[in-house]
Image 1 (cartoon, rainbow, N blue to C red):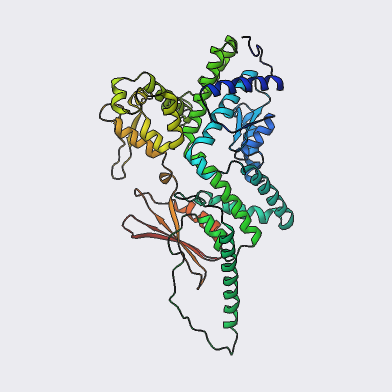
Image 2 (image 1 turned 135 degrees about the vertical axis):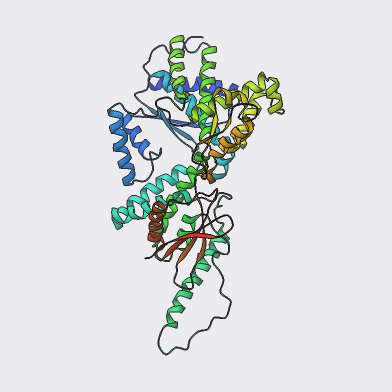
Length: 496
């Protein structure tokens, strides 16, 4: 078979031919994907998308402009390279290629984004639960248009003030344990009736203050609201804030929906990038085995691929923590090795996977895990040795750092557990929940921070976030920090 191309230049016909060739290889490995839509954009458009949290059709905000200028200056001066692609989790899956790329790089990106990320978006349980792939683009377009219309009607300053406050709380705009379902028609009617009844109560309450009217008496016991603590603070604000106008509630809802869109991506960074890297490596190698690409193409590919999966040592210049591409790619590659050529050590650690069909085993791992559980389940002793992993303990009561465990027989399970916990969302996002809304009194809102592992909040940052919450709520807000025994350690208050 002749090579698809031999030079570095590309055109749309070549991109189409490579997409078909890679698609044929993906079909050999039974990769299940959404349909693909490929867009070619300039480096400036890539910078723009880069600054907009990877969403070229997202709503405008001043922070995106600030990020654009920062990235552009770093890029122009050669301090920073750009991502070769951006991909949107949607159906069809939209991949943006940069026009400055060589033909090899366009093919690599097609394999990485259009078949690696795409199959992960379609298969992983978090994306299936949390993302409506066939509706997200329409929603992004709606959100962009709505925000721009609000800016024209109410002024940029008013709109950006609300969005600023929502961004400050965006990490608390997702329910960890349940996905909100779209309301049915019956639920919508119930909500409308409840809203009407509530407005009527407010109206009646005004009459109670008119002089000469007989005082009203409460006929029932005062009930706490909400009945149970609620962790989705943005959702609570959207539904119950006493002061927000309807257009402001819609802005809260837009930011909350985008926080929900990004939730599975944050939970699966290692898996998602590792899966895409694993497949671009195997699909391009398959093209080479079929003699559809030449040696020069392959050498350029290997150089780029090696840069992507490079993991610098902790004492090397440029170390920035664990490279998710390197760890994810190594784990999926290692799982294939365990299936195909298991050692006695692999048979002890992975008895059900050793010697099994690698395609089905990797597909199972991709579909049913997130970073925390994926590492906790599948990180092998062999990889811990190759990465030279070790754990450093920094105990509050001790002045010196201590090497907690290393990659040896005594330390494998401890190392794997500690690394897994680093990807646990609960360890990076504080557990803060709404516990009380004085809706029959001064309308104040009380939140509770459940302290974990003796880690207090940074008071200055917490105070700033409280100001944003108070702006959205319109009345006094207070935050209580409690230790694991339920004892209140300190209280922050923000009055309006």
